[in-house]
Length: 206
Image (cartoon, rainbow, N blue to C red; front, side, top):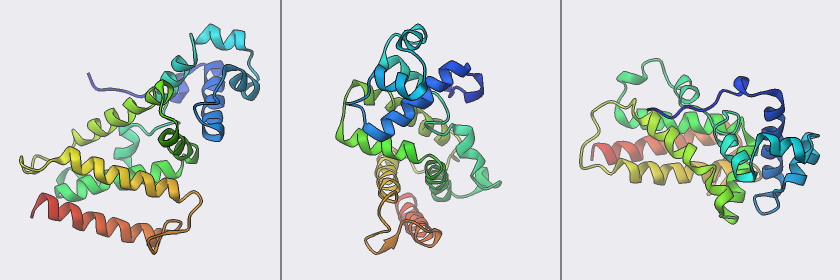
């Protein structure tokens, strides 16, 4: 069964406040300092009520991972692709995924900050947010055409490009340029897009 994110409008108002407060706390102070007291203070909801809805912090993060305001859904990512997406060549389909992801993450700066914390503070809590990213990518790539050669290690290529795009998106929060390429305007990202398409074309059709 395909994995589905929980639309934010299906959450109760109280749960939404708890998740939003957790999201903000994580972005500001990271995983190691995340406590129920901090969530209660930011949300204005008592610990007692929080633990009425959730058994613990890990349960809150599990719910946060499945809410679309933390990570874009497959539908959101596909909505950013060209209308002719099913018929374009494979390298442009893969490229469209990363361009769409970059656009969605640009609208979620707190998520980028959380990703930065995740690299510094690996824990059971951070792992709660990982699966959704993998599953969303897998769902998206189910829509790829059948023209990717069998000998191409697409998973490795996606990991490499995904890591690069995520890192550069995180750096764009406080860095204007990286390696001489602007990270804070469309001109720079268009250069990166062109380079990515050239690399993908070389990989898929050497």
